[in-house]
Length: 578
Image (cartoon, rainbow, N blue to C red):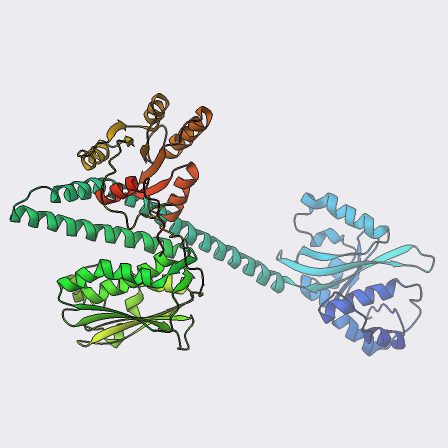
C-alpha cells in the first residue's frame, strides 16, 4: 500500500504554486520547498482534506521530503530522498536522524540544540553535510519545519531537501582555484621583488668599485700623457661608460617589470630639453660623420607638463640607437602635434639612414634582451634592453610606439605621448639623481673661499678618491670612516660641507645625518650642507636621503665634475628653466 500524506485541496495547492510574491530565494525548487513547509504549518491544513493526486505528485517529485517525530526518529521519506541517501524506506523508518550525520559525536551538542529549537517550533534552514548509506559525503540545502496539530502541539518535523553536492564542489573548486591564483600572483610578485632587491644589491656592489675605477681614470686623463697612454685612458673611459649603461638599463628593466616606475609630472620647456640632447649627442654623431637634425613644427607649444627626465630617456635611447646603427647619412628628430589615431597629443619621430630592420622583427624588437638578430648583438653590442624600457615608459605617458623600416634603407621610430600644455614659463627642474638642486650652467671651478669639508665613507678607496679630486684646491679636507666618527667630529667643529656615504656599519648615513641635524638645532649652529653619496640610484633612495635631512643626493660613481658642481651649487643656486 502506498503511503500518502494529504495536506490540502487541489485548489489551495494550485493557488500556492501560482504565488509570485517577492522572495530572496533564487531557484524555483527552493521556493516550492519553503512555501510548502510554511503551508503545512498553517492551522487551515488538515489531514482529512484530500488533494488532487497529480498536483501532489508533482510537488513531491520536485523535492526530497522526509518526516521525523520530535525526537528525530524517521517516520517516512519520499523516493527522491531515498535516491539521494541510497537507502530503502524500510531501512530508515524508525531510525534516528543521526545516521545521516558524519562525525556526529564531534557535533552532538550543536545537533541537540538544533532539535531543541525545532521542538520549540522554530524552523531551521541551511546547508548541511550528510552521509549516504555508502558513506559518501554529500551536501544538501534543507528546511526543517515543525508541524502543529489542531491543538497547537508540535507533532512532527518535515524536512525538504535539495542535493547541492555538485554546486558545492564547483564552489569549492572555484575557491581553490582563486586561492591558487592568488598564491601564484603573490609568488610572482615576491619573485619580482626579490629580483629587484637582488639587482639593487648587485648594482650597489658593482657601483662601489666602479666609483674608484671611473674616478681614477678621469683623474688620470687630466695628467700629462703620451699618445699611447691617452689611447689607453680613452679605452678605459669608453668601457666605464658602457658598463654604467648596462647597469642602469638592467635596473630600469627590473623597476618596469615590478611596476615601480612613476612619472613625475612637472612643467618643463621642450626646446630646452631638445637643446640638451643635441649638446650631448651632437658630438657623437659628428664623430661618425653623421648629421643630427632637430625639427619642431611651428604650431608646437613651448611649455608642457610631464616627466622631462623620462621623455629625455626615451629620446636618448632612440637617438643613440639611430647613431649606433647608422654609418652614413643623417639622423633626424621631428616633434609635431599628434594628428594620428593613436593616443596622446604629441608625436615624436626619430629617423635614420642606417641598417634598417626586417618586418618580421618588428614585434620582438621591443622585447627585453632582443635585437634585430644575433649578428647585430655581436657586431654592435648592447643588452637589447633600451627599446623594451622605452616602450614601457611611453605606455606610462599614455602613448604608443611603433616603427617603419626597410633593411639597408633606414628606420623611423614614432611614439606619441600625453603632455598637457601649460602657460607657466618659469619651471623648477626635477633631477632625481641630484636632489633639490639644479647643477647645470655652473662652470667647473672650485670656489675661492676656503671651505671645511668632511668626507664620510667606510671604504678607503672612496675616501682617497675624494681627496684626489680636491687635492689641488684651497679647501681643508677631513675624513671619517663611520657615521659614529663623523658625528664625533661634527660635535668638535663646524663643517661647511659633508659628503656622507649612506651604507656604513654601526651607524649608517641616514642615522648620522639625523643626529647631526638634531645637534645643530640644539646648539643653534649654522647647518652644514650634507650631500648623500650612495650607490643606490632609485628615486625612492633620493627621497629617503632628503627625508633624512640631506641637501642633495649624489649617485655613485661620482665623477669629479659632479663633485665640483655640487660644491659650486652652494654659491650659485639654480634659477635655470628646462
